[in-house]
Image (cartoon, rainbow, N blue to C red):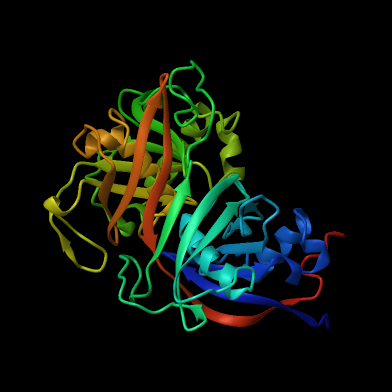
Length: 404
């Protein structure tokens, strides 16, 4: 009989936007887990309760969804003019894998608040504390405007966020220069559009799309994302989770299309590699605005939104919208001629309000074209964050042993 003791690691369980995860200070991790590698991956898997063939995370802190299978590390920043470095790990639910290839925009909100909770950033006077975050996964700057009062982060308030049950204090996020830099493959579109085109036509199997061709906007802003028209796949754009997640054939179809798009974007060399890159790229489908009902039963009129968007994360339709995908939506909407922009009515715009399964979300972005290259200086959105539990998370000794 195994009699391994458990070890206790200081941690905070936090909600950020419509996601939640386990937050650590780098210096609190076991020494072997303070650097990238298998030990760190194994520790985070055990904290979350993965891989779990039952898909429940019963023996861990995860919630068995892409929105709740997350771990975060913060530390004082090694970058000039930044307060903290923020590293994010997306833990696979049922496979032996932790994906470090992208950011979580929702938990970026909690990262700003946690920087103050953790003592990395002084609270300062009552008002709004600006926290400059270096997103270490993708090498980008995020500025979080965190409300503080009476010597601590203000967590409660009346800001309502669709997809989150209770109101909280508003935190404004600025994603600076969210698109990749450089030029696309033909020198015309820039790496924000890695193929150099605002709309590509993907060659796909006839079994996936009639005619074997699918229009797509491939963008790398916030997070690499593949946008397609809902109608081209036989959807309205107002689908709720059950319509996609309860249909194994639909999920397999989206994953196959995601792999094809990832190859076209140059993120992987072959579709078979997509299984080892589950977090990126995302795939989303868009449609013009329409009257619809959200997952909570709330009716949304077409006139309240600019377009409909549904996005998949880690192979499942997201219950709301990933923060990084919202950045991609805002950036793509700001560029005339993309599928997102056309679904929103076309033309120039500096903000967009879109419908997602849980409600609506607004995101601002200003795009400009310089010498044929599209860039976005920043994207802005409001979210909220709250500590759910703080103390120590327990894992059996040997959980991150790499000897085997």
